[in-house]
Length: 330
Image (cartoon, rainbow, N blue to C red; front, side, top):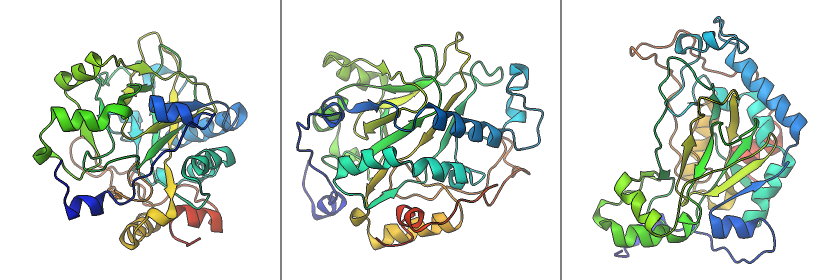
């Protein structure tokens, strides 16, 4: 890759891992992902899942989570094709912020970055209803959430798991160790002139064969309610669909954290704008801040009459929450 001043500036926040650590960070570094067991505990997971499902049922439709015949698009708030909800101000619901502020979740990211002065992403809620009759299964969409223009570790993504994720259930799929060959892949298999700053990049079937030839095969990440799953944004991954044998409603909250001192003034301004208007951003906390539209559209292009411009239940705006949001300095 030709090194330019622009690329160096774009790459300014890379972080060098200095393992071995003798703990789960070694797996994060060598495998590209790790499951931290019982990070919030099963009872807390049950609470957050119930709050998530209560939110799902709050739109006045005939949705009955005990009756799969009611699991149809017309009875559900609009979600994207990967089963996540980002609209309706859901990312700023009180229960979402409570989950983001769980002590062991914060501790895990503090351990990664070496600081407890963190920012958090305004990320999505995922509720996947198995065997939803009017929704075709999503094909694998392997991708990374870091531009090849960035070198080194820049982002660690997180998933607060609120439901059982077994072999038949919806779950995160990763390509173990793909983070360790990320730069080799882009440098040898792609044309640098095609690289973009966007921190998102799909892999084609042909490109996936390169990883397979290097001994890497997809793996479903199994987890229990209360577990925290972390992965390097250079790790190839995607959301795995449930099989026909699953009866588990997958429920997860996505949350990524990074040091506050990595954020530019412009980034903090964008985070404040998103926070003040109850909108979602991306998987990143300190950079790559793209504010999502807060207007939800139906498939026919009209505005959803159930659109919400503020949460049903706003969080308590403590100093710690405002610091994590990037609204109040440390």
